[in-house]
Length: 218
Image (cartoon, rainbow, N blue to C red; front, side, top):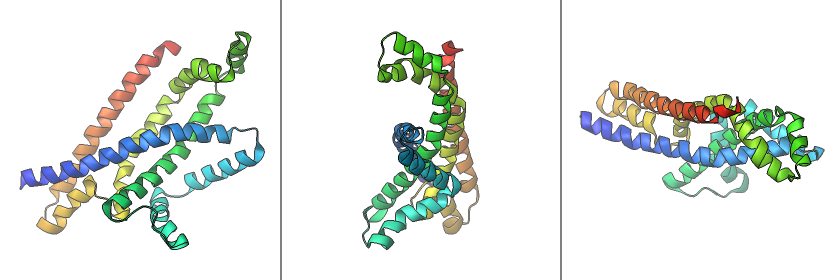
C-alpha cells in the first residue's frame, strides 16, 4: 500500500510542478509587459491596466479559476479550452498566468520606479537608447530589488497550485485525498505536506543563490 500511495502522490506532485513551472514561464514576462502598461503616459491604457490590476488583486484566485474555465462556454456558448483533462489543465494555466502576471506587474512597477532618475540620465549622456538603458543598466538592479517580494509570490504559487482541483485538475492534494475515500487512510494527505515543504525549501535555496549572485549591486 505504501508504494501505491507514494506512486500516486508522485504523479500528482508532477502535475503540481508542471503548473508551477509553466505559470512562471508565462507570468514573469507577461507581468513585465503589464507593468509598462500601468506606468504608461497614455492615460486610457494606464486606466484600463490599473483597473484590471484592482480586479485581479481584489478577487480570489479560486473565483478566477471558475470564471476562466466556465465563463467562455456560458457567455459565448463555446468551450475554448478543449475537452477532458487537457482542456481543464489549459484553463488552469490561463487563470494562474493571468493572476500572477498582474501581481508580478506591481512588483516590477515598484522596482522600476525605485531606480533613481539619474541612472536614466547617465545612460542618455553616454548615448544609450532607452532600450539599452533599461536592459543594460536598469533591469538587473530592478531584479535585485524585487527578488524578496517576488520570492514570496513564487512560494505562494507553490501552495496555490492546490487550487487547480477546483476545476478537477489532478494534483498532489487530490491524490492524497483520494485515499481517504477509497482506503480510509489519512496519512497520505499528511504526506502531501512533505512534498510541499521539500519543494518550497528547494525554491528558497534557489532564490537565495540568485540573490547572492546579485549582491554586487549592494
